[in-house]
Image (cartoon, rainbow, N blue to C red; front, side, top):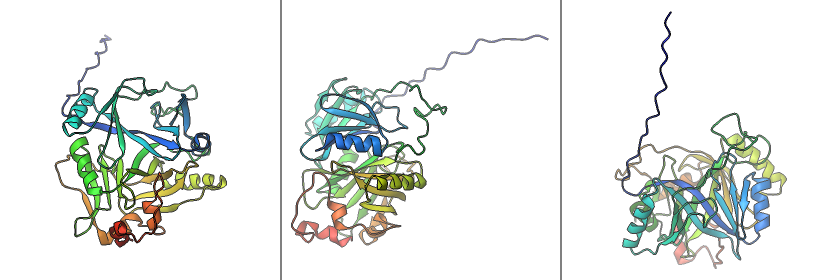
Length: 352
């Protein structure tokens, strides 16, 4: 019997073509809190995130299923709210492309060198038309495989079980803006994001839309803000594997005296389960699971799901209790207002 041995072929090196600047995915969010240690304690000891490290200004956190150095950054400030929302670009060279494109549009761009933010590569920062600040980065460092790593090689850590109300990863951000339509169009034109869902009235008024750069229905949800033009945060969302995990998380949160602001319920728009709470600093957190994916990401194809304004109640809550006007418009920083009947809120009250 003759045995023939062959040398293993060298792996083929495939180079991804570099085209127009594109986003890879929503990667991190930076929040302010007036009580840093209480917020860190909540995220780590109640929600079950992991503290990667901290410096003199920031605390860097990640979820149990994330390999990235961080997905949430917390900083001490007088008021809660969004510092910035972060995305990775698809290729390092795309950072320059975005910077040039944004500057041509008259947007001021700040360049940040690798290492200025712990665990991050080169990045740029700029304000969108809704008032929020964004950060595009070339990379976030990957953590080393922990000593207590999972036997499932895709996971950095074992499945957490009952060790906390533990989300697998950061999912999306919901922002409050004075014009949803203007922000939607800007995100499509300037960032190349795809609009996947919109609530729209006969007069063209849009109180809600969703945008993505991946197959997830949304990485940014945009909601109408009748009370501020500053660009506020409505919530960040953390992903759970299933509704049972959210129910268990709700039990753990209740044991810590944290009650729901809304939920448990299911959005009609997006078809995901939700449970909303506030962290001690005042920022709203959505516990999120389910939903559907959008597999055709060609931004030139107008296949967005459109909900009419008179269907908005079902879009917001398909299963569960209705959301109040206060819940829909109260973000961070909080804005005092005289009445929900102010003229700027006229459109909003029509969808309740």
